[in-house]
Length: 635
Image (cartoon, rainbow, N blue to C red; front, top):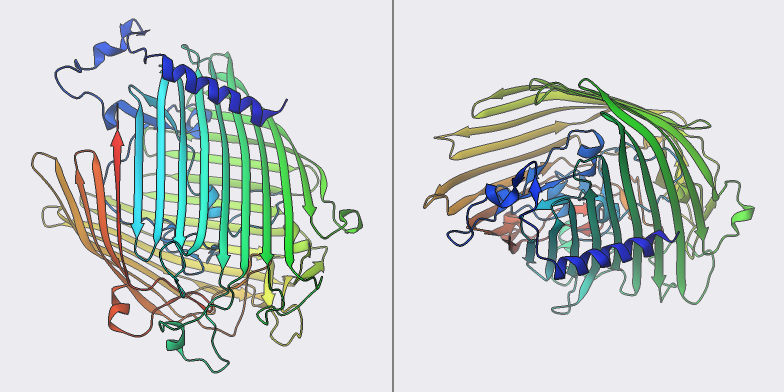
């Protein structure tokens, strides 16, 4: 069956039904009419955030059936950039929508094969798919009008066709102007469009549930290669208004399409059988119309115009059984995953690695929830041959901890690649990781504090490294010959004082690399983040404000550089990202169903000649005024 076409027709049929059929509020549920629980809409406006709920597929899988109300809070509404939303633990190329990479090691999502083209994963994966239960049509529009042509639009629409059948869609657009030698409004650095359609249905007795969604993203970046400087450059050269980009004719494209279907059926009391289907495709392309540019350190194919293209496809089917014994949920499953990697300039049959095949998985889950705030979760998965991952987590009001161990495959791009400017073929061993986290928490009225530590060990770690002495292909993948051991003590504080109108948030993260074979890990020693804000509500809850200042400081370190043709971040020891105090002022305001914010970003650069670096040779966002708003409609 052609699943994308099937789901499209299903979504289309749902939309038609929703447009011609009034929402059946009078249908009896549990012996009572739904409308009986809502006030007469002729006397007052009855629909709002409390009448619209959302939940995730995960909560249904765990048999918890928990839902949440729509977020209408203004707290931290001004934190709209992806770096903000990821707690400043990622680096980009100095502008919204550009390539991103975690500064600190991140645990693998899959233990099997993967493409390795991950620079734009955040824009695809950051938001969890939400499914809704609405009494009336719900829509929300968010528009961010960032300074210097940085615009973000987010739209969501959903409605219940019937009380047990919901349909909706999301749309997101990034239209981001260049920040280096911008020629005027609309001189784009990034153009990105994302949309999805989603649907959920369950029988009236909840014996059968189905979730379905189809997603697509087209992400295009006009690359600049950083600021062009001489060999004996000064720090101020990167921040002058006359700074020039290294590149003007390079373009990166990342196109992703995914189809998802999950369904479960109750076979006996609290036990269900379920099936999950996932089909994904990723296309990655790099185009350079003037490949003779001195910016590139090597020529492999030596063509008049560069056009590197790669495709990665996977199809996964999972069949499992799950159910509750008392408060304990047990789950076991079997899965197959077909994969195929197509390189534009490689005959895959001549490579030492398989680029097409089928993986077989087995795994399970054990989850226990004792009252609210006490949860235990254990998950395991094995790829039948060698790879595996095991994770255990515990959360209570006073203690939080987790233990994770995995052995996973290096990515395709780490093992084989040929493009206009790069080429290699490797056979790397599987990577091993262990990570232990533990936090003690102090939850008091008006004061929340926690302190803990994260310990991570790596073996056979694969990374990209810069070799400055090489005459060609200076950036190549390498497998560490030893271990990496890191410890990261962390402290968090949230204090509300003076009648709980003022809030102080603080976070301190210290990272020490105890063992670092091949200098494979480069991280800042300190990351400090804090916010001081005032918040109050006036006019019987109809006027809500928050304003304050926010600061972030990161110690100087050799940040990972970025190899543009291969979309890979690499270790280097030539360029130091200086320590810099990033200071923002903000004002958030909510009135009825609308929210807006004003933010002045990077205040200090307005009074000095230099700023900060996101990635070596890529200056971070300069001082700029941002504005944004959103509005929700419940009818």
